[in-house]
Length: 310
Image 1 (cartoon, rainbow, N blue to C red):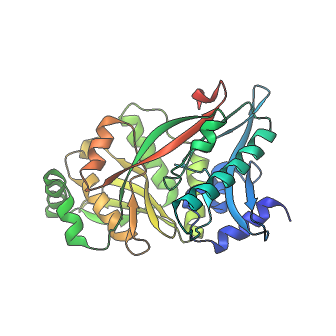
Image 2: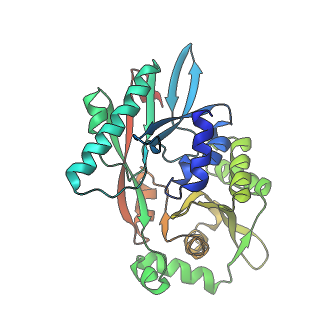
């Protein structure tokens, strides 16, 4: 059996593999034939580490880069109990080195991947000439207690949510095609042209719904006009605020803040944590920080002269 098929079976059984490294998500974002996986096995032959990747070819070059609509991939380590930190780091260093050896054997022109925030030690990559840029996401680790959660919101966010509720804005749903058209309208009104391809977003939404791991939610007024919409998805531990969109004419309606609140209400039916999917943009970072989030660093690891282009 090929490593990719072994990994598919592993994903079906191993709940600790994050959403964006799941085989079904890689199928949706990359195309089934465009991605593969590197596996590390222990002495008993069991998978102890894995790195799924998107392999691309361009300009006569072969390289690995981050799939669109995918926050992180990187190395997944099977959860294991260790005697102490020395044993843990030694084993993780060894597994990372085995992954690096496989990467080097591929003779890539360059490599760029964002690693999940649980991967905290990139030294084995540093020792082999890779570079690292720290990025940030914003998370709420426990969304189970509404009162405690709401109290951690900034006064501005609380005020916006109450205003939206007072003005009769309510939760709704939307079909995938309509959602994409709504997002296009929002981008056009903001003068932006970089919305991801229709086929990509529709594939991801379809796959997430099929797996029972995603939903489109909206905030609409009493006349049925949609102010804000969101593609929310989740794995076994965390929900991701993945594709939000708010019409600029409703910027002051409180809809975007209410959308976050309702997304958390939906997420708590499935998971314990909520991830705003990060942003390095100053105004977005400021908004996410106001929801009582915790700033979490993660690594963008790269190697190769053209890696900065991705």
